[in-house]
Length: 321
Image (cartoon, rainbow, N blue to C red; front, top):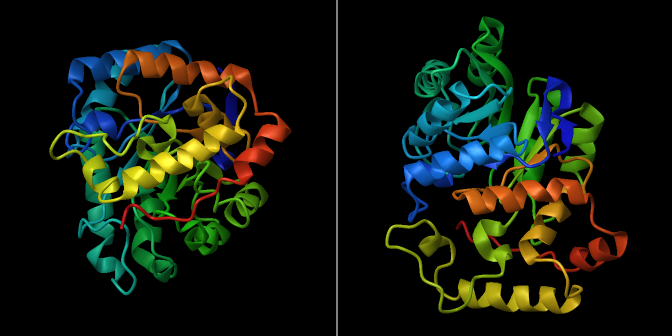
């Protein structure tokens, strides 16, 4: 496993991080706590030292599982979690004031609740789970995050950028008040490259790249006939005609790529080939996925000719709508 600096935090984090949304158990169905705990422990054995969770993932259940594993390992594990929007609206909506989403006392209370779930002395990285640039000058988020850092309960702070809106974080980065951003970045969504990534490198901001496999689209396993358990988040994400669209785009992508190498491997290495990325956080709900994902760090960046091919497959869409 290779490691990179998480921006100005100074944390040396594994290139492959652990995305813990799926182990929350409410929106990604079909797994078990026992399987999740085994996957977490195996990932750590293989060098993964950053786990990204959130208070909203299973109403704290993901945090509880993460804390259980982190407390019983000797390795230094960096835990990132998130404050959910108080109005429970993802993404943040234009025109909605911050008092309805992240009032001061609510941010502090959520941080305390996350600490209680994790049963850790401090949160390494606390992120706001949505962001609206209209809030930039409001004192609530500034005061809450600042006080949590000064108290030692939180070591670093950041934001999780709204889906497919990377430029919405440019102004908050310029304030110097956050240490990291979390953003969607994958073969299909390359939108952070023109503006966000250069600014992050300039300001020494850590980047957590999420959704590297486009919620499963870039595994290559989605067909028009794919089904998911009732209540699973993917029923909405791949609703209507979207599975057919995905299958067609993936088929075109495969035609352009050399026959060797799996699509998920190439998709993760695409993300890590960008030097602005500190870590990529795919979901891992099984030991098999933990092992295959962790092994990719040793393979290094993709060849320039492969990257040139992948650049042509950017796809402007928003399946979260």
